[in-house]
Length: 203
Image (cartoon, rainbow, N blue to C red; front, side, top):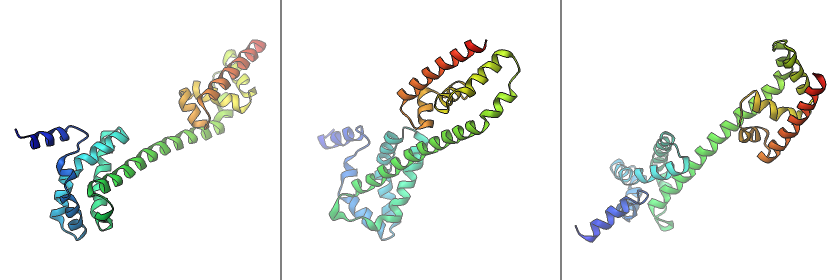
């Protein structure tokens, strides 16, 4: 094996980066793709798709979503190839910049979706809290618990309800209420103390 071939194989094992990916010929392929050359784009795709997938997987940490992002990126490369300017940088870097932007957008979109779901759960909990107490069984202990919960301030009651009745973790409660986890823990401890004192007084 000659040293050149060995170096290329070694490059293949490091983040999917290959000698071909750094070849100035990629610039020419991208320029030809900008002119509508489908064969040039196919060659560019074969050279860079694996590298784009590796970058997307590292950012998103979900193989299926990373594959979707890779396809989106390569479609974007085909559509916007005419924006590439060889004088400003290599084709590989241009494509990977698009890939990184798309991957970060996907992560933010997923996080925003989860945050919306949690906020919706909080709003629903606030609307339904008063009816929950009316629907529970009439055993005395439960009656006292719900009465004491209603006497807590909203800032002490909501973390307890989300944690013990909705099953959220400290981190999820903190995200739902847009506050630090330490603040959530502090309020839950304070709420539990007041709840205990109220139940003792009502027993």
